[in-house]
Length: 310
Image: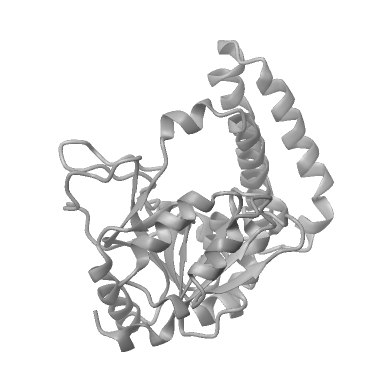
């Protein structure tokens, strides 16, 4: 790949106590992205062996938080440090399977002035897929996934500005997507770039933090409704999501849900002042047009297995 191709791209990664995964990611990035074009934020990891990575990958620009700020806050910090024309955001446990397609992604951005973000195709699993071939085509979508995407830097700095860090680790991409839509910028799903997210979905569902994820995702979704949706529709959406949580989980014996629903409601109340300062409400027609757009696929699987959309 041409070395001058990267002069207008910065790749950013946030990390916290995942040195082994990050080391694997960086080793897989060799020969793809020049390390001098990478900025990594270590969010106050307690694993002191990270300092060995600093020395080994000395060309990378390392940023270290003095206290744990959270994924969203760290990503805000990195995004606002970028001075190049484009930003690639990548999780610390993910890497490119089709890096040659990055050039096509940049060319697409340059040929489509209305494009603010490209959402990449994601494969979730501990082992890489047997094939990278996909039947999907480039299409306009309503949102993108945080694990891997490409931003036009001016759009981030002039439109999105920052993710709401009080969301913790869910809903920030939908927040940005709604802001972009309101401002007239488009998001496209770009399946040519395939990213391997080295995560076991089954293991993640069994982890103790899965209930906490429910709390955070509900609070973020409700906040986005109240910030962007017409009031009546926002309240209807919140009530519907509560009803579905009760139907699908509580009535099937998941009594822990009571705790996390209560905490999500308390979060909604606690962060009311922050939310009220972010009034970007769409009208009914705008919301209808937004919801008519397809969602970007979160999970892709090789042919013979249908991709799963959100």
